[in-house]
Image 1: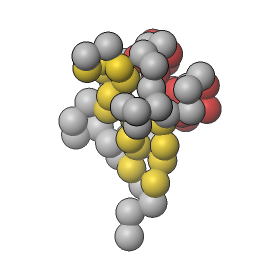
Image 2: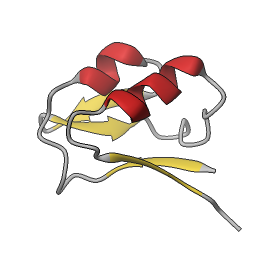
Image 3: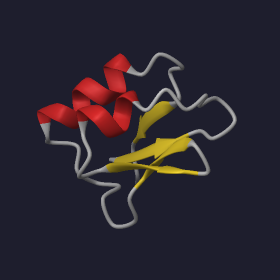
Length: 64
C-alpha cells in the first residue's frame, strides 16, 4: 500500500500536515508525502489524515 497526494486536487489546507507531521509536509503550499514515508499506513494519524482531507486529495493505492 502506498500513500500519495494529488497536487491537482489539493488546495493546501494543511490538515494532513497537522494530523500526521511525521508523514506529510507542504511543498509550494500544497500537501505532500515526505519521501520515504509513503508506506506508513499503519499509523492511526495517517488514517485520520486520509479520511479528514477536505479536498479528498490523499489516496491509498495497492502496489502489486
